[in-house]
Length: 238
Ligand SMILES: Cc1cc2nc3c(=O)[nH]c(=O)nc-3n(C[C@H](O)[C@H](O)[C@H](O)COP(=O)(O)O)c2cc1C
Image (cartoon, rainbow, N blue to C red; front, side, top):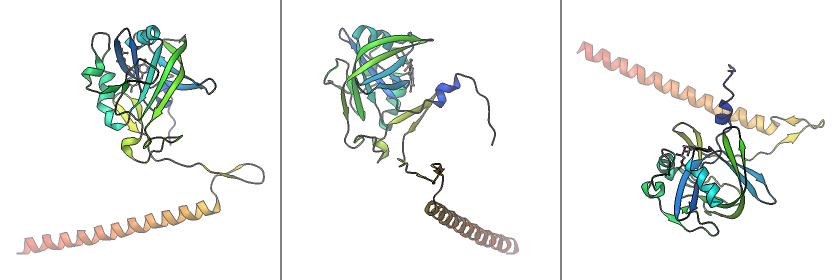
């Protein structure tokens, strides 16, 4: 195992794989949409979320002027559209139209909501602060909607199409999948038991089965090799 040192800016990539949001905005009859992955919850009461936007983005102006935004959370069916919406500024083009996505009216915001997404969060802007070279917009959550198939107080991750997209950087995305339930036990001193007796037995059984499978595959491969060699000998003799 090799531990490498990376640039401080790699922190952003390491922290990145959360759901991608497509932030939609509206101001004076104009609309825009851009994928934003630097997003966070800031407070439960009141419900506040933060989106981090570079000041050069058209989205930054739209959020500042419109004082509201919506976060649309796509699944893998909107992968191409998500990448397209990030490929150019919406200053001179109606990106939502060009991306061919359908939109519907939100329950609170003027910002259009994107059809085909898995969840939608409508926000009013509470605050804006500059941190380094980006702007943090603090949004008060006004309405939340999500597909039943995708979300029930947590992401269900039952099937690929209804699981959110994560962004890895560049043109790399992932589907957030495989829900894991975390339960743990502690010993008398209160320290974590990394593997219980039952878990060790389960692991050993699993490993044994994998070993048997590999051995069987190896033997099968060996038999096939012998048959191939025998055929080759027959070919050369006759
Ligand atoms: C998946 C993804 C996530 C992104 N996340 C952010 C982000 O968090 N903040 C940001 O300022 N730009 C982000 N970008 C870049 C903007 O989406 C991109 O610059 C876009 O063209 C801006 O459009 P606009 O100028 O119409 O606002 C991201 C790009 C991609 C592909």
